[in-house]
Amino acid sequence: MTSPYAALTTSPEWQALLACRDKLQGSPMKALFADDPERATRYFIDGAGLSLDFSKNRLTDEVLEALMQLARSRKLEERRTALLCGEKVNTTEDRPALHTALRNAGTNTIVIDGQNVVAEVNTTLARMDTFVQEVRNQSRTGYTGKAFTDVVSIGIGGSFLGPKLVSEALQPYQSSGLRCHYVANIDGTEICETLAGLHPETTLFLVQSKSFGTRETLENSRVARAWFIERSGSEQAVASHFMAVTANTAAAQDFGIDPDNVFPMWDWVGGRYSLWSAIGLPVALTIGMNNFRALLAGAHAMDTHFQNAPLKENLPVVMAMLGVWYNNFWGADTHAILPYDHYLRSLPDHLQQLDMESNGKRVNLRGETLEYQTGPVIWGGVGANGQHAYHQLIHQGTRLIPADFIIPLQTHNPVATHHADLFANCLGQSRAMMTGKTLEEAKAELAASGASEEDIEQLAPHKVVPGNQPSNTLMMKKVTPKTVGALIALYEHRTFVQGVIWDVDSFDQWGVELGKQLGQDILPRLLQSSTTGEASDTGTDNLIKLFRSANRP
Ligand code: F6P
Image 1 (cartoon, rainbow, N blue to C red):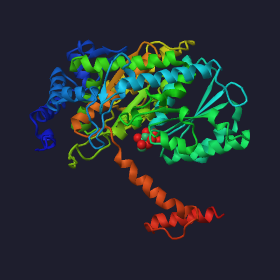
Image 2: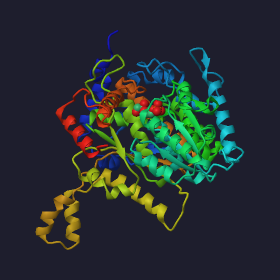
Image 3: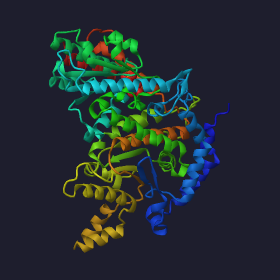
Image 4: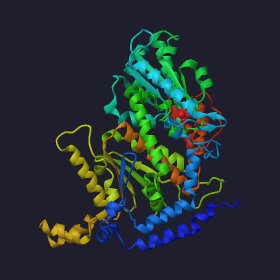
């Protein structure tokens, strides 16, 4: 089969976009707005409770059409159907990627390898519902009969970032009195600091690991189990306090978790797409199953929008293609996620794994090395804090940094004029990115302030802001279970669309294996349990010696 990947950069659709870019060089966004104020309404779309203003982009109708032509040339609509119908789009692992089935309760059947997965999903949701209710109504207690007060979720990557994001995002909906703690890192400080404040009789542990083979999670769980047994004096009581969420029930059982305490996951759900599964248990325990089901419903609403909305009115498609536009035609190496909402402060962390572990790839589906850029560096942080940290570089640096501003129209916590102030900051930043400040404007500003001619000449160049920096503004009425579900699902589909354009497998992550393995090779030499071990490079060998001398038994 001839590889179509080569066709990408020589395709007529790609060439048309190169011509569009050249044409736009002389038309900054400021001029586009002046010539066509109506763009503000033309480039504004809604879907699943979210609204997207994408008018502050290097975009004309011609560019938008050309971007959609590129999407069609990459058979996006066919690949979208394949994703949603459970075809094996994860080609290197020969699996579907059916995170959408986790939130599609209304569907009767989705068959994978002869199995109707919807039945399994619904059975697991029902089990979650019962478990959550029992813990919250205190009919399920610890080994002394005391109600649970604390939940410790032990997991990393997709078994951590998604649940943590949603726990924080839906803080206003926490109604159980249960405190939720997340432990991810193999840095012992995290598990030690978490356990320090807890009591075994009222603590519930969730071991969250799709593979049940992730060393960080297993080592932390072993420490937690030992702590529990040592403090409670009862190994038998482990059964009442340790649950597992995994696709590897046998390994969970070997670890000492009762099979009845294992919630299943499936290999057709990637870790970074799994918060909708029982991996979401820590969230469901704290906000209740009704709110968890609302989260699922919000994501399903975005799935439906993604499936049905015309490409130019399709939030994931428009955002994805704008990302391709800057990544592949304007040389942007990064993309900033700027949530202007305290509850969404961990969104960039989750999207880093979602996007970079999905599209940080260098070969296409046929294993051929790619000669064009794929996934960008995803970074960001909560606004308005970022304005006092990295916005300087966005405004006056030498790089193109497209940004997504994300902000609710209403706050959960009205106080003084704070929300209007936050919103003004958000709009001020996207406007400054777009309009900038010319040398003439800087000089006039300095002159109006009474600066001397000499000072004006010296200082003005330092006050110029080039502008023409693109941004999207994504809004919801309020941060709720439904809008949070839709927001995360939006970025899942945005990631998928870009993977289709770049012809990569967005659902595997072979790149994480080497570092893990080399770390395991080094570990015995650090533990002083082995002085042999294969010598590595002299740099690493030197650092091993330093660690050994600093940590002699
Ligand atoms: O980073 C590699 C990875 O496999 C992620 O894809 C995954 O979310 C994380 O490690 C944790 O994996 P598990 O849930 O199997 O412990």
